[in-house]
Image 1 (tube, rainbow, N blue to C red):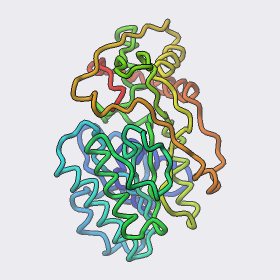
Image 2 (image 1 turned 135 degrees about the vertical axis):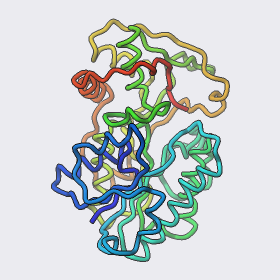
Image 3 (image 1 turned 180 degrees about the vertical axis):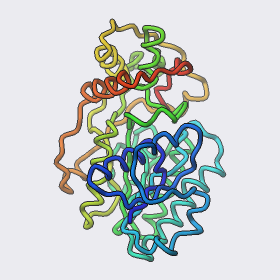
Length: 330
């Protein structure tokens, strides 16, 4: 039996899809369903669904005694949230409870950390666990994830569990994420509806508008990398999951225009005041640790991934009416 928290979410549902392709369906999905994210579960095969608020009361009894691994991907991932109490309870305390249970019952625990823990990047993007105390997240979401990483290190657990620092993941099944949708999806809608894409201006000397850089990772690669740690039980610790190649927002936009066969038209707009102090101008995953651990699969380039994703969106005629604002996220 496998458990996927956040199983109706973006990466979680994609992970379940891949597990199904590998003929694994003894899966318990844990999440909080709403009018949108339930659609991610349609067509997937799994054993049971449990609401996340009920789950902690049920672990350790019945079928849960047969659990082989928990993929803990559930979290509030809103990088603009100011609800500190909720973020700490949902992202930190919940994770601690699950980790302790897994360790007590010899269950593989693989959890989602985040590249948001790296803050402005001044301390680099190394997943060396000894560098954790020096990191300074720029927002409450990143801090809630960082707190758990620090707790796991302090308790000496990182040689028994796996933490995955996902960078900017995008791809199918993210439509329900609202303001946290990737700029690839938002840009797709902007171009279809208006013929142009809107990106934030740069406010840092030496960096032109649209030349802010991020490490973009296609969800198909994120899932393969995640399952690598399920298949290799001897691995533990914190690992970066990214492409290892920072790309500009402009490059993302041009790739999207190319995939849609539309002449490029980029408009640079003011960044909201509340975002300026927590905006990451550069992220790039250092992948030496996961590579040295034995992950040898090639990672899809940004242009190839956007071409594939745009085809997916066009095939489904997935057009929304309220996604014309940019969110080249914080």
